[in-house]
Structure formats: structure tokens, C-alpha cells
Image: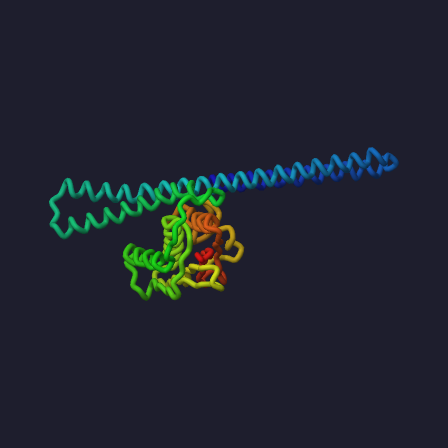
Length: 296
């Protein structure tokens, strides 16, 4: 209902702007027909008309952007609320069960494992929200040390396998030539982990994911993550790196905060590199790449 109301607001302001432009043009056309001999006044009249039209267009663009930004913020708040509330509710349920019932040791151990997994999920969400405020591309990189990119990728892959219970065939690690980059190890780990988590999330039940490293002309190191999941429409390939942005459709119904890829691109820019996505379209998988300057 709220989304429908906003769409009506957008349509109203667009229609209002178009109507004002048409009325203005008709008035000045009529003025030209009846008072064509007043050249100076005509010039200033057209100038004023151009200013009015530009103002109406800019106002409409601003309103549309603000409405869309508010929609994204609301979606982000809802997503974060869900991501925080779900593990907390799960942990509380298991604790209440342990307090009110006598359970055997095997069941108790299973409860503890589940609560630890929910705690990790909770900490991951909190860390993503906090990291978003720290890794803006305009902020300066404070801690720069040599980072073994191959070892970092292998660590992220092993963690994702353990967290999502994936086999080596479902999530492959293809590291070749050893590559070192200069940067903040925690930020680079967060960026690579976000790419892997993104591939796992959108790969469906039968996952085929490959993470690898390529050295480009001895000057750059590229970390790529390929999947055979739901794919991305070509029109969305650049938008998905925006803060809070979620691809409309089936992808938007998946859990998440809309911050992971924003963090990826911000980290890449802070390290003097870039990040991009490739996909042949819906249902044809996708490939995400982080390219960073290699350490000399």
C-alpha cells in the first residue's frame, strides 16, 4: 500500500511538471503569434520560459530521487530489523528450552552450535552496518600492510564452506601465482567474504561457485567469484553497488541488508582499485571482480 502511494506521488509530480511545461509553451507560442514585433520582450520571455521549464524538470527529478531514496532507506531498515531480530529470537528460544526442559547432552550440544551460528550471523550484520560508515571511498586508508591475497582468499573460502556446509566441489578455490597487495587486511577480508557470501546466497540449491586470483600484467591482482545462480539483468550491473540497493524481483526477496556490494566497491576504491560485475542476464549466473594494484 505504501509503495503504491509513492508511485502515485511520482506519477502526480511528473504529470504536474509536464502540464506546467505544456501550458508555458502554449502561452509563449500565443504571445509570439499576437505580439511578434516585440523582439526584446520576446527574447526575455523565452529566457524566462526556459528558466521555468528547467526549474520544473529539476524539481521533478529531485522529488523522484528523494522518493526512491526513502524507499531504499525503508527497505534497509526492514532488512536490518529482520536480520537482527531473527537470530535473537532463535537464541532466546533455545535458551528458554534449555532452562525449562531437561535435554540430553547431544541435543544440548546441537543447541549450542545453533546459538553460535546465530551469534555469528548477528555479529556479521552488525559489523556490516558499522563498516559501511568506516569504508566510504572518500575516507583515507589508515592501516596499510603487505597482504598475501592467495592466503586471504583461501581463508575466506574455508570459512564459507564451514558456515554453509559446502563441499569443495560446490565452492572451489582456484589460486595460482602468489600475489601480494598493500592494504588493510580486515577490509580486504570483508570485501572478499562479501563476494563469496553473495554468490552463495544467489546460487540456489545446487551451488557451483569458483573463487580465483589472476595476476594482470604483473601490475594488478584480480579476485573473481563466479557462480551459476540467478544472474543479473544488464541494466542492474552498475546499480547493485549502490548503498541499500536491491535488484527488483526474486533477488529482492532474499535476506540481506543491501550493503555487501557497496562495501566491496568502497574497499576497492580505498585501495586504489575497482570492482565490477558481469552477467549474461537472468538465469545465466554472474561474475564479480575486485581489481587491486599488486605490491612491487
